[in-house]
Amino acid sequence: MAEFTSGFFMGDKATNGRILVVDDEADIRKVVRMTLQKAGYDVLEAENGEKAIETINAGENRLLLDVVICDIRMPKINGVEAIAYFRSNYPRVPLIVLTGFPDTDMATSMLRQGVVDYLVKPVEGEKLRESVARAMDQRELAHL
Amino acid sequence: MRDLTDSAVVSTLAPTKVAILGAGRGGTALLDLLYRIPSIEIIGIADRDSQAPGLQRARDLKIPVTEQAEELIANHGVNLIMDVTGDPQMERVIHLHRRPGADVLSGTASRVLWELVRHEANLQAELFHAEKLAGIGHFAAGIAHDINNPLQLILGLAENLVDETDIKTVHEQAMEIVEAVKRTSAISRDLTQYARKTSARDDVVVWLNGILDEALKIARYAASFHDITVVKQYEAGVDVKGNPDELLHVFVNLITNAVHAMDQGGGTLTMTTRAGGGATSVSIADTGCGMPPEVLSRIFEPFFTTKGPGKGTGLGLYNVKTIVNKMIGKIAVDSRVDEGTTITITLPSSEEAPP
Ligand SMILES: Nc1ncnc2c1ncn2[C@@H]1O[C@H](COP(=O)(O)OP(=O)(O)OP(=O)(O)O)[C@@H](O)[C@H]1O
Ligand SMILES: [Mg+2]
Image (cartoon, rainbow over all chains, first blue to last red; front, side, top):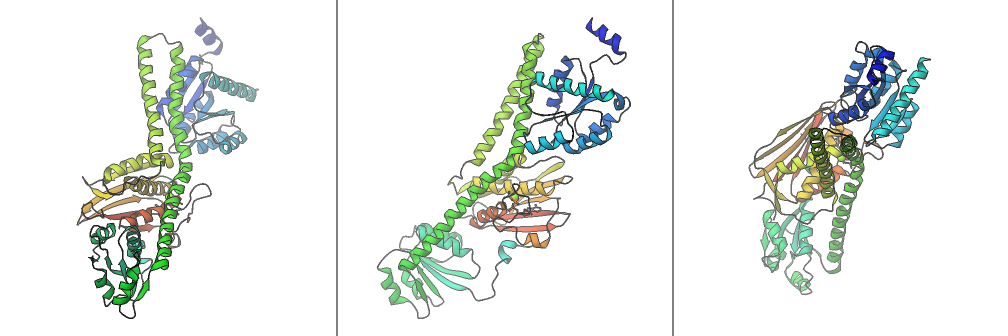
């Protein structure tokens, strides 16, 4: 019933939003996916900044991607570089940092660059979903 | 290749020939200290007790030993007689037998010298430990990453289990949690072992390949290995006699430096062990930034670092050199800017090594 309703109102996009999770650890991508799918989000994965940039530039993602959740410490293009790329090329897509390293300098610099949240692992599902919901609101505002 | 440990202080003057009387703790420390100074030649060491530790050590270093102090005192070549026997009679014996032209250091003077040597040894031990603790700072990012990632997995799975009804999934995820907990606890075990003070086990047979693997594991917390390919070229069964904790520390430092040198764009870390001809060698090679001559000439100085504040203490290679010297080993550094660095440590293999 719920599925039918959201499909009815949202056309093809029968989800609450499309989220890209960027983390070099498959385990992390898996639990974040689990957590967000429960809240009705559609989840894409990328294992590093390079793949993330490829993904966001691929076909409909360019338009349909709602939020990016990104780690900092990653191979290839790291989180800092990837976030800078997203901010300048896709300023409308809200970003959430999800990192293993509590670093106040990094957090400050990230928040200054406009990321919605700087979350330190381990973060509870509830908190992550709240953060994503907030990011979604920002996206709606940006569209108005 | 430049052999920095040797070429740094080569002197062209004729060496000072020293005779050491007394091969107890004082004599042994003196022997170790003087042995490393190229401008000093130890022509012999004497002790009434043929089992005195300094005599054993001298035999390993191929330095003549005798139980007859008189013989050594009367030796023609000797320029300086150092008396650390603590025996009040010895002064008379020296007086009777020494050649004119041979200087004597005895009594209070030699005691003060012995104090200085001991002080220097303590200082080194303290610097060594200080660097290890400072090094833990490097580890913070790596540890946080390696602990918080599995914690995220554990938390995520546990939250899911709260309302998971499929028994097969429950079982699988519970097992995943168990594995993640094990991984996490291994981290603190590795690191606490590394951080503890160095043990006094100085003469254990150490299998270098095992120590290198352990060092690699620990270095992973100190430096980011992203985009780094690790190549091991181990010869089987390569061993040395030494202190395993100190050797571990040597390799953690070398590997960490190598990986730091490749933090722009990655590269290859090659760890090689070789044995043969009574010697054992380990090289750690990187394809990193390399060093210009003005850096290369200073890397063994204490507190010399090109890394930013909070990033390097500059004690890493100083401690490496101290440990390698103690083991009567050699360090060779081959470095080219933008191409990489190879550091090779050559140690006497276990049968040849000092006891
Ligand atoms: N493999 C290497 N490639 C390039 N430079 C190196 C390498 N190893 C050492 N160096 C240079 O030598 C300096 C001294 O190294 P050392 O290990 O003594 O101190 P450090 O690494 O700066 O600090 P730490 O006390 O944390 O080890 C380094 O700062 C670096 O400039
Ligand atoms: Mg170092």
